[in-house]
Each structure stands twice: as C-alpha cells, then as structure tokens.
Length: 298
Image (tube, rainbow, N blue to C red):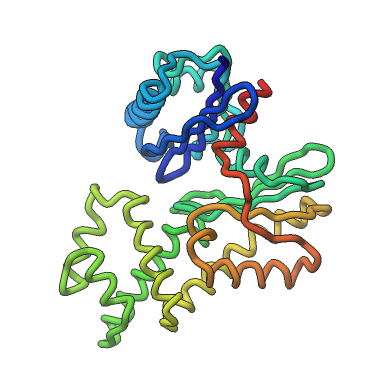
C-alpha cells in the first residue's frame, strides 16, 4: 500500500493526515508548530520529527510515496534547499513539496470558480485565485505589522483595554478574566509575565478565547473588541476581493472564525455589505486532508 502525508503547519499547532492511494484518511496527528520563523529551525525540525515518529509508530510504516506540507512560515512554494533544511533526515518520502499554509486552505475551498479564503488563527491572512490561476495574498504581515482579526491581535487589544480600565480607575469582566488568566490579583503584576521571554505569541493569543467567551455572554467591551477586529480584518479581505473580481465563494478558516460566533457574524456582515451575492462559509475540508490529496497528485 502507498501512503501519502499531508501537513497543515499553522502558527500554534501542526496537524498531519495520512491517506492511502484511494484517498481514505487513515490517521491524523496533532503536534507543535513547525513555523521555523517563530520557533526556530531546530525546534521546527524537532516538532516535525515528533509527529512523524508518532505516525510511523501508529501505522507501522517508514516511507511515504509523497508528502505535501503547508507551513505558516512560507508565502510561496519552498525551494529544494529549504525543504531539505526542514525535512532532511526526518521525512522519508519519494517526493516532498512545501507551500504556505494559506495555500492548502485556499485549495480547501471546494466548488468555487474563483475561490478565496480568509484565515484568522494565531495570525491572519487572506488569499484568492482568479480564473487564470493567479494567486493573490493580502494581510499576513505578522503580529508586529498587522494580523488584525487574529487571536493574537484580539488578545492584545483586550489587554490594552485592561490597561485603560485601570488608568480610569474602573473595573470590568475582561480585567477580572485577565487577572485569572495570568494568575494575578493586580493586573500590573502581569506586566512581567506578559513581557517575559517565555510568553510566546501563541501563548498570549490564547487569551482571545477568553474574550470570545465573554462576548458570547454579552459583555459589551468584549463584543466591541470583536467588532473592532472584524472591521479591521475586513479591509485586507476587501482588497483581495477587488483583485479576484469573480470570486464566488469566500471560505473561512482558523480558530477565531470557528470558535467565535460574534466575530464571524460581524465579519460576514461587513464583507456581504461590500460584496453582495458572495457566498461566505466555513471551509468544509480540513486543510491537512487537502494537503494529503495534493500529495497524491504530486
């Protein structure tokens, strides 16, 4: 039997799927990030190796016909040198191709003439493909330059709101939640924790789920933050849709879209207002499964 490996390497976690030659998904495995810009190449290789070892042990295999890796550290297809730098000595496959994680998410938008995808996970980015096969990308500038609508951006916006509440001498549910999240009774004591080298981007981004829960419960400040972030992420998506003029389906992917109903509904409302008639929906095929399919087609 031939085995094909598909990997979705996001900013926080990596999900792998193995399929047989008939497209049946045999196993999925979740591990840590392989984004070598965020965690470093040594850690990325270690995390990839851990996933591969666990899969090989579970299925009793040691070779793949081909593998397709989507990695959040990439904007485009990786060359052979970079592919070997990450996978060499770890992944035993006859063919290996690496591209961006947004690419495999875009390919997960099914039944579209000109598909587009908007991703809000730890980071945020949008991409689309026109009728000529040209791929366009907007956003994806990283947490320093952008990433509006991402879990990281939501978390930082919420924490800045906590600072404002304290300066005003006010209290609020978000402030109480932040104190609990960081294990302090005085938010000022969280400063050292937040600025600690141990507080990585993905760890801080986890506070977004707390903000999302408060928004679902009707907290006005949390709802406002979600609306604010949706508004700012609408801009790069709008620019993308101007480039991919015949886009008929906009797929949504990432933890923020999947887990935060208020954010998703506000974003859809904003996009629909500027682009009436556009179908907007969560993508149905997980990107790691799409990557496994792409591996079968190498």
